[in-house]
Length: 208
Ligand code: MN3
Image (cartoon, rainbow, N blue to C red):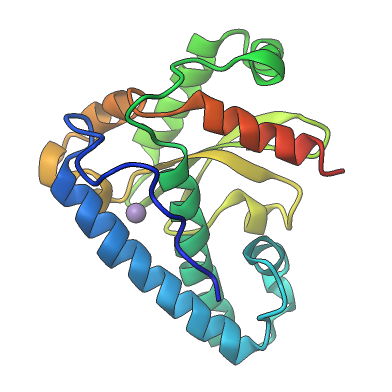
């Protein structure tokens, strides 16, 4: 069984940046539906012994194209939202620290420059999708964006693992921000917890 990450905060705790109704709908409807459909697809594909990361990294080995698409869309929907909901907090650490901060400065020049690149990736993604900060096992960092529920694991067959994901599907912001995706992206950074992002970074770098 692949389970939704438990929220560390109440549905209304991210107000005023992310509103309560959006959180309720996003977590208990959208994410719950992806999770259920992913479990069904994994069962059908007989992949229940694998982690979600392993499945997403090796989708090219699934022969049945309908099943492969189901695993891509729902596996991504499951995995991406687990990341998204776990890196937000009502009391976030506002900036990166330690090892991650050093790598960000070395790669992008500064934290502000990274924020600019992430904002650019999120705001220019046409239609539904995500913006990402990903790491490889050597600790390298990259910013990217993907359509729909794709993610960097699938696209790189496991080389890159996202440590930060910004959901730019309309369901993530439309109730509060309407068509103003740019405003949502700016406010998202107010609830983004760099402590959690840093922990994910450490895990990936130390997993090799
Ligand atoms: Mn979403």
